[in-house]
Image (cartoon, rainbow, N blue to C red):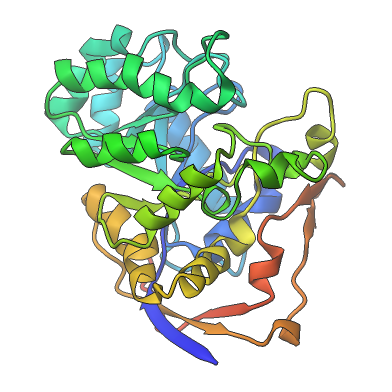
Length: 358
């Protein structure tokens, strides 16, 4: 039996949705993670500090009785034409807003409000650089002439590299890196970091396509090649502080996943920690788990590391039978990613976290 203790983990990219879905999925994130960096792509998009604060209140109300006492949703604003630069700066200065998120229009779920050019927001980006506000990017080209498996690399070359060149000092997170190109860009640029998801770490495109289409694994950016997955695993297990966990947990009702067209997104919040722990175990890298899930992201966002800890125990395979789906309060079914890893791991709080603000 393998037992280890680590600082409480954080999730640096999560979708909690709203309304019935918010109520159903938020408790899973709030139970496990101390910080949760919440994406703003609702309808309508979260483009103001007031909207972010109201959304945070809804999240906290939905967190449930088993939430960590130190659970803290960190709010982001949607970088588009509706965002007011002065409001963003004021919200960040007051600690109400952590970052701004850029979506290319049409790239993924609820991205219709996104932009057609990242550099078109240069004045906002310059103000963010001066104030130290991080930019989060969904790094995916929407050019229809670009192959779906090349869209991350093309976005980085055409959109992000010019911004890094013309807006020095801008702090950037390349979200849900899916290719070696994303890893290489992070490594080559100071102030740039990258989040990596459990599903991009443990699946490649053959898992999605080779033995019958798996709509439950369809996400944006898409799960890429075996070579790209191997590169992601090497980065996550390397101890490089530029890379950290962002689950990109993105729940959709099963009816939407099986629809035509299917909705992109993988719901992994319930077992994200177990999936990454099992990956580290298989790679003989459990000593790197704490850095990846607990330290590197907090350091990048200039927040304190967790003072509380959790214990993880690797079990015999038949000792637990995890749920494989969630039923929302309005009767929708959401498939959970990571069930196999959850059969092998149990985690529990080891030291009692302090109440936020207490």
